Structures are given as structure tokens and as C-alpha cells.
Length: 485
Image (cartoon, rainbow, N blue to C red):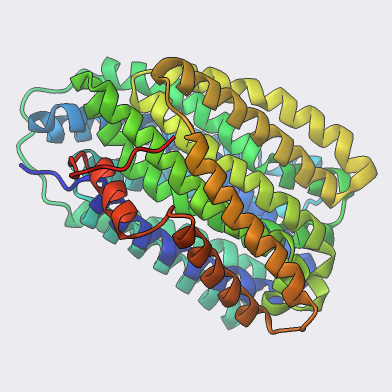
């Protein structure tokens, strides 16, 4: 069976992620405006708590299933069934523990009203555990279109149910219930529509456990360093309004990492196959071009969001959320570092070193905790955002060192310099345009057009470059490739 290349897989999954972003932004903006900062803050705490417990089942078993399905597609059905058994046991245990600990956790955060909200959200882990195993099964088979279709379905169900149940009068309780019901429907639909094949001999569970266990630890820690700042904001500032401000900042800054989850998901099975083939040149090409895509995408977003944070919050959330402007700027930088860290972890894990990836991620947790404890009391929301930024900066440095040491590949200096130069151009232009008081969307459009023009002039983005980029990511050999330094 032929497999779509990384280019096609990234395109399908990126389309799904774009739908996630649009629906997610719509959901957050509606809730922020409809509920107000205080109730929206409660939703944010529950959402990110649910996200953290959900990661117990997002990376470990599903990624093990994807890896072994990609390596042994003739045993795919047996691998999936074994993965579902393991995943259900893990997910049920995690959900039960979260349900039982809902009350003490709510008291720890200084708000007993969170208890019932946490318990409503507890089953999410079970449903998404099933969903992600099947989703990564399709990823391992290279069925990116089907994988993106299921992801799109889950994203749309989430937005519709959260908004709908809130609007009919259930307010924050309806919003949290919408998250759980959407997860349940998504998992049931993919489970019952999927066409099961012949399983053959059972797949050894030990292989999935050995590969997945380090990733489960890493995914838990990654979730903590990603969203623990929200828990610290709620627990240390004792203010749901501040939590609402911080939720709006995190929601606006999330575009960067989620855009690259698509690339990470498409790269993962390809990296596993290249590693099995021992093709170091192709691996280096993957690393160089992934890092190039990171810079090309991240830098203009950084300029636009960091230097227009107040205007962005005013446009989407209204003036009530302007106190989140500074934290939005720092969170945008934090999530940019997170994007690089996510892609680099994909290379480390996909090349057969999940323990190395896990150890690096675990090492960041105490740093994250210490920074939040030290920075939030004097700096408030900005301190939480700074803690996240420094944590992922260290993760980026560590992951880059590992990749460069192992593969002798990273960021190409010439290409990096040209991309940074294009970003500096729009940074200067942004300050000049600010004097004219243009509407935000028009200002953003001008900056993006000028950025693409600058890349074109610097010969960093043209038809030949696009053809080479696609060719390298898909493993093709384009003729007359241009050497980059």
C-alpha cells in the first residue's frame, strides 16, 4: 500500500488544525464575551486541567501504536486492538482518580465551586483515550486524510456543543459539559464507523508498554509545563477574573504550537521509517526544512502579536480583557519556543530515543514550578507568562543540542539570517504603520504581504524554493537543488 508523503500528510493535518484554530477561537471569544472574565476564568481552569489529565492518554500508547503500525502495517489490526485495551485501562484509572480528587484540588485552588466542574470533565480522558489511539492508528498507516477528517469532526463538535450549551442558559456548566459530550461523541463515532480487519496473532503488549511508558511520563510533564501556569495563577492570585484574563491570553497565543502539531504528526511516522532505513541524509533534510518552516512561520506571528497585543484583545474580547496584553506578548514568545521544542522532540522520539525525549521534558518541570513560584507573586500574570517563556527556551536549547549532536543538522545560518532579516523589515514597518492608526486587520494584511515580498527579494521564498522544500519533505530528489549555507 502506497503512503502519502510528509507534504500531503502535513497539508491534510494542517487543514484540520486550521479548523481547530478557527473553531477554538470562535469558542473562546464567545465564552469570554458571553460569560465575562470571572466565569470564563473558571472555564479556563477546568479546560487546562482537563487538557493536562488528557495528555496521560494522548502520547504514550497512541504514539506507540503509530510507530509499530508504520513499521509493521500487516499487523496493524492486532496492534490497534492491543493498544485499545491498554489505553482503556489507563484512561479509566486516570479519570477515576481525577473524579475522586476533584474536591481537594478545588480547595487547593481556593474555589470549591470548581469541584462539580472538574467532575463533569473527568470522563474526557476515557473518551479521548479511545479517540487518539484510533487516530494514531490511521497516522501510522499514512491515512492522513481520514485522520484529519476525524480530528475535524472532534473540533467542530467541541465548538458547537460548548457554545450551544452555554447559550441555552447553562453558562459555564454547559461549556464544560460540552467538552465532555463532544469527546464522547467523537470517540463513539470513530469506534463504530471504523472497519475492523482480521487481527491475526495478538501483538505483544510489552512492546507498546516499553515504547509508550517513557512517552506517557513525558506527555504528563509536558502538559504540566504547558498549562501549570494557569493553575498557579488561580491558586496564587485567588482571583477568577485574573484567570479569565490569562485564559484569553493563552487562547490568542495558541496558534503557533497548534499549527506545528500538524507537521509533528505527519513527520513522526516518516522519521521512524527513515531511522529504520538508516538514511542520515534524508533525516538531515527533514531537520533543516522543518526548522526553516518553523522560522518562516513563527517570526512574523511574533512581530504581529507581540507588538499589537492590546489591539488584538480589544478586537476579539473587548476592553474588559486588556489587562492580559502584556502576558499575551510573553505567551506568544513562549509558545514559539514550544513549537520548536515540539518539532525537535518529534525527531528525538521518532528516531528511536523516547527516553531521551522524556528525560529532557522531565528536567524542565522543576524549573517551571520554581519560576512560577518566584515570578507570579511580584509580577502577577506577566510572571506566569515569563515562567512559561524561560521554561520552553531552555527546552528548545536542550532539544537542539541533542539533535545537532546526533544528526549534525539544525538551523542553516544563511537561511536563518535571511528569514530574520525579513522579520526585521516588518518589525520596522509595524512601528511606521502605527502612526497612521490603521484598522488591525488591514495592518496585519500589509505586514504579511511585505513579509512575503521580503522573503521573495531575499531569495528565501520563491517557486524553486517551494519545489525544493516539498521535494525534501516528501523524499523526492528535485533537480538542480540550490545549496544553502
